[in-house]
Image 1 (tube, helix red, strand yellow):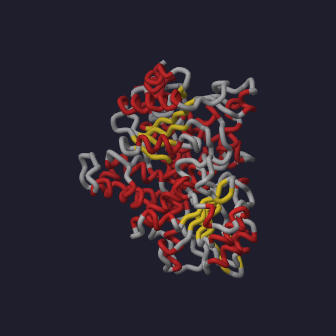
Image 2 (tube, helix red, strand yellow; image 1 turned 45 degrees about the horizontal axis):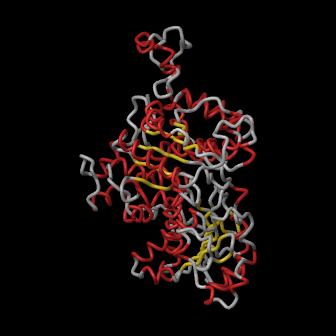
Image 3 (tube, helix red, strand yellow; image 1 turned 45 degrees about the vertical axis):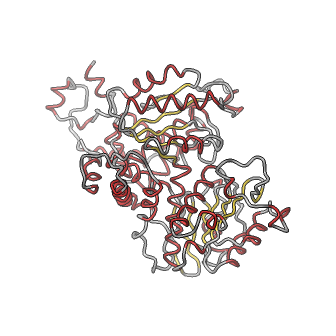
Length: 540
C-alpha cells in the first residue's frame, strides 16, 4: 500500500525516475518499467506526446494528467515552454474547462471545496486538503466573476488551480505549499442550476450577512491554521470583491488580483509608454471603459500614483472618467458601486450629458489620452473611437485588456492600423506582432502574471505582515528596464517569455519595500538572499 500511495501522490511521485535504490527502499521494485529515466528524458517524452494533441483543450487535459500525477515533472516541463503552455493551462483555454468542469470531473487536484451551507466544516475541509503540508499561499474564489465569462459556481475552482500553476511556473513558489479553494455560495447561472450533472450547490447565490460571516469564519480559520499565510482573492463579484479586500487588507497579508494586480500591470504599461514619449503621468487624462472590480481597481491604482507624484486626491480625480453599462458615470446614479463613486462626475458639468452613453461621444467630449477597456464588450473600440483618441494626443495609450479573446474591445492590429501606428497598445490576451508600414510592432500583454507571481514570492520571502500601496507601487515601477524604449515598435510591457526574470525583480522590489516599512518578519535580513532562498526549482 505504501508504494502505491507514493506513486499516487503528485508531490512524491517520480515515476520512471526512481532510482534502483529508491525502488528497493520504497517497495517499488517491479511496479515500474526497468529503465530509469532522467527528468530531462521524461520531459522530452512528455512534450512529444503533448505535440500530438490536435486541439488546445486536448493539450490542457493532457497537461492536467501530468499535473495530477507528478508535480515536479509538470513544472519542469512548464518552465521549458512557459510562453507556449501559459495560455493552455490558464487563460484563455481554462475558460472552456471551467464551463465544462462538472461534465469532465475526474480528480479534485488537491483543492478545497467550501460549502456556504456548512460553515462548521471549514476547519475540517482545510485540514483534509492541506494534510501535513505547510500552506503559505491560498488562492480562493467564489467564482461569481470568472474571467470574462461570469458566474460558474463551484466549477470556478479551476481558476484557483490555474492561478497557482502560474505562481509556481513563473516565480518558483513551492507547489507543496499552496492550496486552491472555491467557496460555493451557490450560482445564479440558470443553466447550471438546471444541469443534472452540476456538482455544486443547486441554489441561487447567498449574499448579505450570512455570506460575509462565512468569509470571516474562513479567514479566521485559515489564519489560525497557517500562520505565515498570504491570501489571494480571485474573481469575486463586483458587489463583494472590494468590500472583502478593504476589510482585510490592513489586517492580514492579502491581495486581490482583479482589483490590484491588473492595476499594477496596467500602470507598468503606462510607465512604459511615458518612458518613450517623455510625458508626465500627472498630465494624462484617463478613461476607464468598464467600471467593474478590475476597471475601478486599475483606475484607483493609477489615481494613487498620480497622488504620489504630487497631486492632491481631489486634483487627481479630475483626470479620471469612468464608463460602465449606464454610460459615463454621474454621481446622481443610484446603482454606483463604492469603487465607482469617487470617479463619478456631476451631470450639470456636461451640456451633452444625454449623449454620453456612447463611447465615441465620451472620447470626443472628455478628450482622454489613456483608454483602458475592461468591459468585455467585444468590438467597443471602433475605428471612430481610435481616431478620436488620436485627435486628443499624438501618442494615445489604448489598452483593450478584456479577456478571453472573444471579449476584446479591439484587437491589436485594428488599433495599430486605425491609429496609423501612433497608439501604444497592450492587450489582455497574447497578441502576435503587427507589421504596419514596415515597422514590426511588438504587442505587450497586460498579463497579471508579470506581477502577481513575483509579488507573492516577495511577500513569502519577506514574511511581510501586510501588502501596502507602497509595496504595490514598487512592483509597478520594477516592470521598467526590460524594454528598450528606443527600439521602433517596442512593447510597453516586457514580453511574457521574460516572466521568470521579471518575477525575481518584482519579488526583490516588494521584499525590500516591506523591509523599509518595517513589515518584513523574516529572519533573513538580506531581501535578495531571502528571495533566492525561498525559490523552488523543479528537480528530483
